[in-house]
Image (cartoon, rainbow over all chains, first blue to last red; front, side):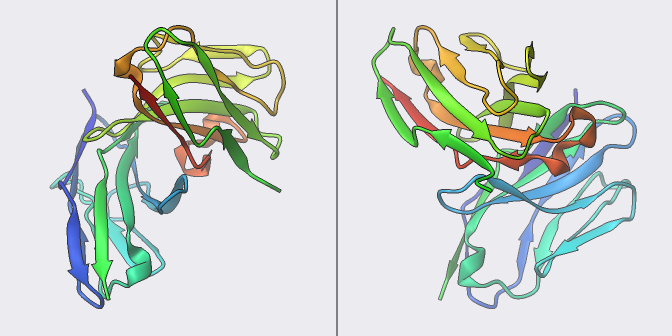
Length: 112
Length: 115
């Protein structure tokens, strides 16, 4: 069945370090892909999305490219800040359907 | 505009007790849903509603009941709590089920511990 696999956390980085959080998926057809962020004590917020192969989603300095050949949607940021400390979720919406599948989440800690 | 609100923030129950998790939204959204979030797992859909009076099961509905008497409110009921229901529960809403997950607004969550 359809699934999303994220790298396990926590990920601990120093401020201004480069961030990569890996996400791979298994799905039939052409799913849409998303990254959500959850700050402490808050609900999930959409961070970025991509709806077709080779699309790049970007927001707040974060980027992710929809790679169909490697079934991946890795999240990257060139220079993280303490305020980026949160849990990041990769998710997909199945082709033509209403089902959304979330990854397990990756917790990021950024040290000053 | 408060968005999606959930109460309580945290609750401890004993096995067999019942309780209702409250969810409300003030955006006149048609679609509302409940998820649970467990360590090492993604969010899983429990129940959803596409409008007042209409509800349906999601991926993990057992042990939970819902109703939708108004557009604003979508309570989740645990009739007889079990330790396996220890989790963080999120309510979400969207103007339409067809709109897709990217348009969903999530509440801050309710952390439930069942002893």
